[in-house]
Image (tube, rainbow, N blue to C red; front, side):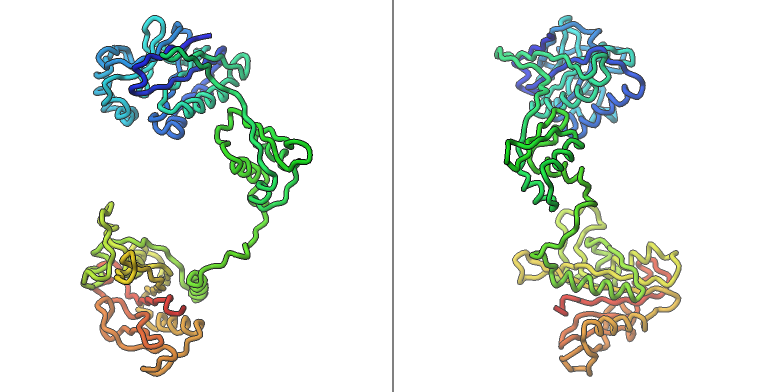
Length: 485
């Protein structure tokens, strides 16, 4: 059995190493590429971009055991790295790879350390400088027959999982299929462990938990059959007990909890085969119910729903709408990623106009609507702001379509059961002339519902249209639908 000796200095930077050997392996171009691709995918995922684990694979026939895992000052490490032809000191290598698009993102893991991890064979040949690069001397090729796999790590559990994944996947290409040669890792304190650890472990899962979570009554035989399809050996745990004993193999490192077993049963059963049911205790919020009803009604009037960003720029929210920022309405983003997301919108109008501006070549007329939230500063709230659910509708065509938007207001009020009443009457709604800068003067009106203003509609001002690069006239409606609750 090959041995890997671990020096004490490795505890300063990358304390763990696990190893294994695959003998009599046969690579073709497809399996070789798959072997390399698996390492890359493991590095990106469970290895967390090599910070937790780094994998090294080597042609064992070019090396001689036993091996040593050490941590040395960078100037003392000298070798020819993979795909290079000259020797580099480890500190020189750090500078060299700063211009390498693939490897430069891993340099930060060790470059500030006083010692670098390194693996040697008996002849002091460098196998690898983890987690950066392997040595050229032991590079694997299509002709490689015996592969030595080492995983250095800061997390031993992750290292074991990664090694198990590598050997269980590619032992199928060995002459004696699914046979793996272990390696003894001897620590500096004299303790030793043999890797890989391919032992299985058992987990008991109540049948009631599986059936209750999925929502389908299943018998023990059905569950065990479904788990077999998911590569899990399962049987009834004891006589008369409604528990499933699941044997978890080393290939299924994702099985950590009974919920993982339940999920596998659900996948094998088929999510589409699980009957839908509505929980009696689950009821939609009145505001969301009203929003859905209004969406349906406006869609039946020939309007298309759009969804726009809740964040916008200050310019779009104020200046481009001919509005002045009085500093008392908009919530400002403290550290915006870009100028396009500086404030939380106080109106649905900027997003709607941007949508039309980006679709100005679309066949006319354009009839769009949105039901969404805006955020306004509010001293009465503990967070200093409150959400309001608004409805916005816009018509854009050869003419302004003001009468269509007006009729939409009347239709919404009709389905809400609100009558049109004379001005000053608080039992229904009426409209009054308004004077907002984003609309044409004399071609706009505010909507008064039970004595208070809940919305506005009118023909959009040409300056505003020009700001959003819209060549055609538009009419716009905005309504606070929370007022109906």
